[in-house]
Image 1 (tube, helix red, strand yellow):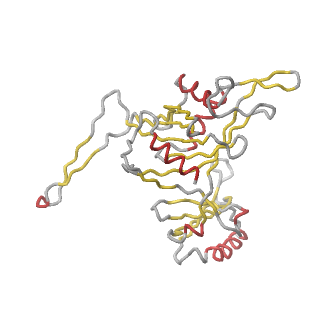
Image 2 (cartoon, rainbow, N blue to C red):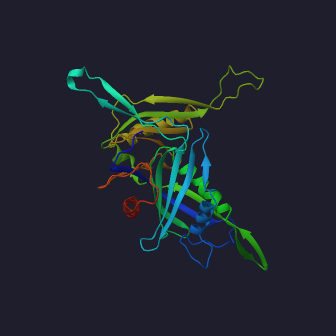
Image 3 (tube, one colour):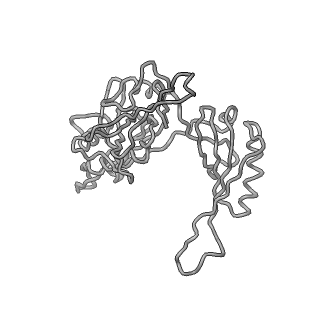
Length: 315
């Protein structure tokens, strides 16, 4: 996946910070010299060079900068993904028109102590929408997903113990971290310009050919239905109402929609049980354009990215 110079996609999340023990205090998210706080927990982990995770392929996702701005009510975390074993990028150049369309290739060589890297911003509005819950926007960059960011933040908070009182006893606790994507798009609206390509059904597998020696264990059976007809914003409810009950009678338990959006991106939408007869909401990435060129990897928090992310959060 290539990154564009003047454009990025963002995905909104609600981030919950809560004490591990219910009697513990909710830590403030911004810096406070008199109280334990979330920013301090992340900065301590960052200063100790422990705010990172090594991926199975050897890539390193690392927290590189923590910036709290009380004026704009934003806490911004900058993450890098470094790939020590990544192949060097190559650039092609077309020859003259009369040269039969041939191209020349130039490879960008890296030094021995360099690592090919990309960066992503997680911008958190420090004004809570509920107690301990904060709206955020994550810059979507390949390989820097919320799942790996969740682990890095959670470990930082687990190491940041603080006291709480239960009766006359003083005990220690820490803050837990849970991100949840904000469902802001409806299937009805998405199908006005997008297309439903496949419906994937899942059920527990019961193959009669698996031996009884424990060598093989059936897990799930998956069936993919290609949508050959036209499913639109007007008729999707009726079509799914006709399909899902019949599929359930046949033992299918999970239903996923493969949707191609108008921005040429794909989303797999799981139909929850409570959504079967209602409007289907899902998390959609939002594209933002920038006037100035964005670097592939930032050494420090980029104020242009923070500003755009806060606008998305406030929308």
